View 1 (cartoon, helix red, strand yellow):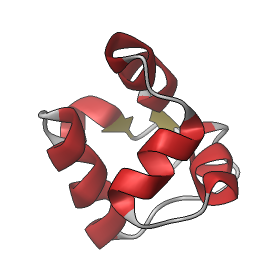
View 2 (tube, helix red, strand yellow):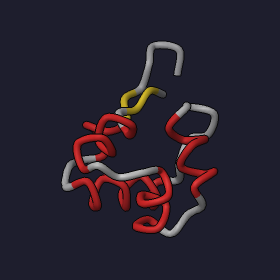
View 3 (cartoon, one colour):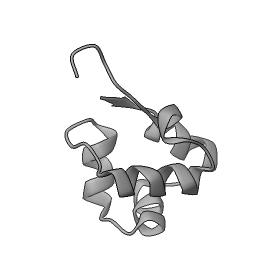
View 4 (tube, helix red, strand yellow):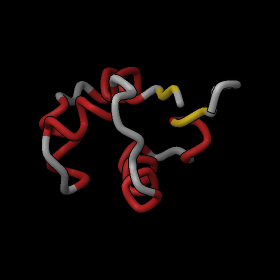
Length: 66
């Protein structure tokens, strides 16, 4: 699964720590999700979409291999 978290963070000038605080997870969890080493839970994906003011589908996209 690919994602646009880094791009979304950049548009808001947020660090990984900022996003972690807003979503209630660790900075390491944000890094793991951002680098596609970990897929977020549905709840966390929805929280991220909410803090970015967008939809889950715009942040997370399935790849053909998923």
